[in-house]
Image 1 (cartoon, helix red, strand yellow):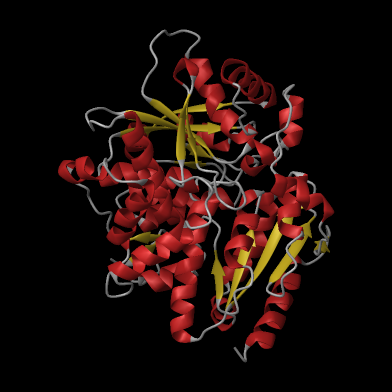
Image 2: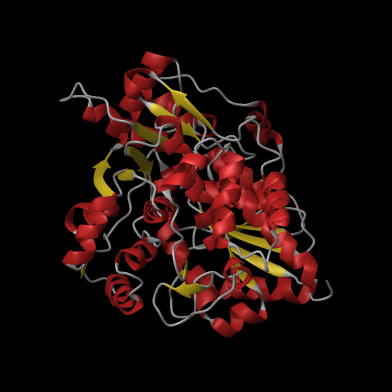
Length: 475
């Protein structure tokens, strides 16, 4: 198994090289040179496995034993999930009116990103310890990625982590989960911009190949292949919970912004899992238009919503999805993405769009009113709180019940705990239920640096990274 750029100009990465890479120098994102197929017999065998065992089976298909022996893979994954509070790591809540919620939020920061991020941290540590090497992890976040990355990397001697968060566009709890971590290797910037605007200086750092190599830059956004790889297991687990006999198709409704989870779902489909994916978005709805019209056009604005982690109008993982759908046509992906990034409308070719519709069969937009309505209905029927992101998928589910008595085999992915979003819970007319850990954040000291409009964000970032690298050279 080797890894190639989605834009076709950078090829033949090992898993280790892919793990430590962000955007490739041609602006692409790494993908496996082939997608392994899982037979129907394997699927039936996997249906009896725990979530942790499923992750191990998926990882083994993408990580060669000569790079990480299978026994080492197993122990790294066990360690990654050792801090999760649910005995099964993840859980499915089967609620009234066919609402099935896949709870992926039982990790340290109460978000689904803890699952993949904890594995990334373990693989980082594995390779860095072997080579006595230092690395700078560079992260842009719309809310949950930053805190999950910080928790996975804090205190590691061989890693410094630099996080950029959009000031005033995360919830207070999300921001505090990042700014209250006072560790020498954690550096947090509050940026006066949107999540999409933050992506530009990040990309500038990674596509400067000499700078990225000299400072050992790495990403743990869903740019990072390892995160996508681990998330594939979500889909197998969800499928088995609804279809233990492995004899039917299951629909999976996914709240999304940057499309990392959608990419993982498409990979699961190409591997042979009989699923259909429904893309659910908030009022920042570029993915709705991509899925229904086959067109990519950068919207002029991004509007803050009750689901802030999805306030993204540049679904950067889309190029990975196009790469799969076009049979690894890097030239085509490059043309589409460069047209889109130049601010022009890019049209997905008909044959590629038709294939996309076989996998991503539907899309749905939930504005703030629908989010609040779904949260309120779920509580009324089940005494079960939803986070606003999960409520986007639940709103889709409830909408399908209006004109049909038939309840399909469907799972809605829960990306975060409602305890992280008391403001949205209150606006839905409900009572927040904070955890003790969340409540304690208010009393902790904070540390961060502000980046203001008009400043050279790329320049500031590069100076900080060079300062870190010079300081850590002695590692």
